[in-house]
Image (tube, rainbow, N blue to C red):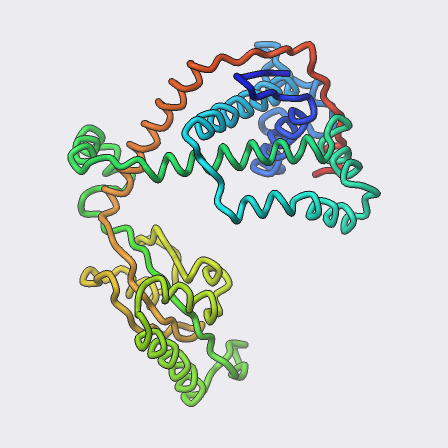
Length: 345
C-alpha cells in the first residue's frame, strides 16, 4: 500500500491501523459518535465525514491510518539509524506474543488466531500482519519516548518560553506562584479488622490502628537498616505495598499538585513546602498507614514550560525527518475488510 525507505505497509497491516482508528474513535466518543455524524450501524463508505467535501468516514479513517503508519515508520527509521534497541522486557514480550495471541483466541472461543483477527480487523488481517503492526508501533512509540527523555531545554530557554506565553500560562494555572509538581513513593499497609457501624461505615478499634502502625513502622525500620536509598524503597514497595495502583511501579506517584484527587492527609504531606528529597514518614488515612518517601519537587510552571518546549521541538524534528523520507502510496491496492461494528462495539 505504501513505502518509506525499506518500510512497507502491507494491506494486512493497514487493516490493523485502519480499524484501530475506528475503534479508538468509538471508544473515545461512545454514544456521542452520532453527534459527529457517525452511525456505526451503517457501512463507513456509505456515510459522510464531510458531505461538503465529499469525504466518507471510510476515507477519513483510511487517511488517518496511513498517516499513523507514516509517523511510526519514520520513527522506526530514525531509531534504527541511531542504533536504538528495545529493552529486554520488550524483546521477551515479542518472543511470547504468538503464544499470548493463541491463548487469547482460545479464551474467546475462536478456532484460530487468524479467525479472531478476521472478526476484529477484517478478512485481510492475520497474526503475521498484527505482529508486524505491533513491532512497528512499539518500537516507534518507545523511540519517541527515548527522544523525549533526552531533550533538556536550558533554564534560560524555559524562562523565555514562560515570558513569551505568560498570560496563557497564568490563565491555565501555571503561574510562578501556583505551586509545585511533586513525586513521591509510598508503601501502603492496610488497616485490618473493623466492624460496620450504623451508617454502614467500617469502624476500627484503637488496637487495630496501633497494630497497623506497628507493621508500617517495622517496614520503615527495615528500609532504614539497609542501604536506605530510593531504589531499595521502590523494591520494598513492590514486595510489601498493598496499593495495587502503584505497587508494580515501586510505589511511585508523579505529577502531584495541590489539585490532585488524593485523600487529604496524603496530599497534605506531599505538598508541604518544607519537604526535601529523601524525607520519610508515616501518614495515616482511612486506608491504613502510608510509609512515605519524598522523591522530588519542582515548580509547576517550570514543568509545564519544559514539556511544551520538548513537544514543540519533537514535532519540528519529526516534520523535518518526514520531509527527508517521502512516502509513496498506491491507493488502488487498498482492500479494506468488513467488520460488524455493532457486534464489535
